[in-house]
Image (tube, rainbow, N blue to C red; front, side, top):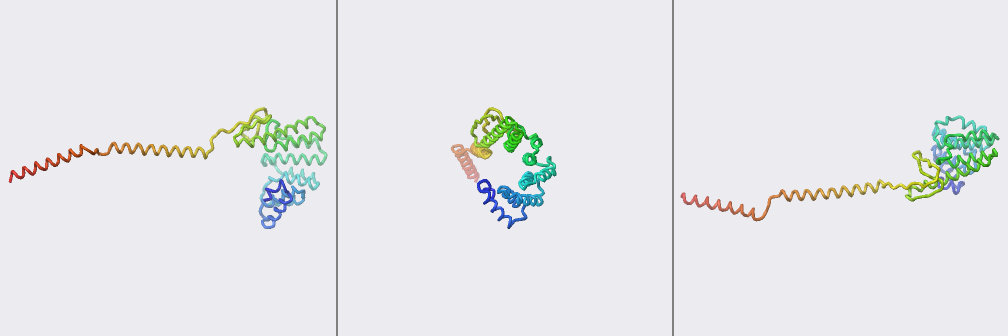
Length: 269
């Protein structure tokens, strides 16, 4: 319920999460949900407490970016940076690593360290020519820092790239509907799940669904079986003894032989 409500009514989602925590407080996902909804309603202190409890229960660092941002929310950007530096980023998944870079950059901005805020965003995932799920937020964060630095033209360019990435991802999500979607500055989806940003059309998936293929295969098997039965019936008909006049002639011959034998026996007597 909390997941369905958080976008439209975060306060109601938070109340549902709190109710769940009263009966399942030792379940990691429940504490995580309380943290996320608390963050959504601006209760950063509660979010921090629940996030730490979640990490203690599960041993996961997946919510580290939210911990860093919550530290910023309670006015402790220095502590936020310490939290972010305490974990080996190579152990994090790519989406979490990108979110952490954005949160760390925000903490640098809170401290007035604008140049270092930009450095936090200098990561391999900041590829302007490819769009992944994290790209719009990453590009937008870079644009915000560039704006703070007074580099307005560059900021506008990265804002434009963020919008292009968002449009590309929205368009790519419709490929499964087997529709040709023409979107400006989109070419294709690569093997890594990214979308190359260029001029073009997203390709349509013309492959046959597995269910349809299975049905076709089953129909072929039925047809082949029916043909095999027909062939067997024909072969059996050919091998069966013939009936009709030939059979009658054989019976007549046997009767004549019996009559001759009886006549011979009578003469001998």
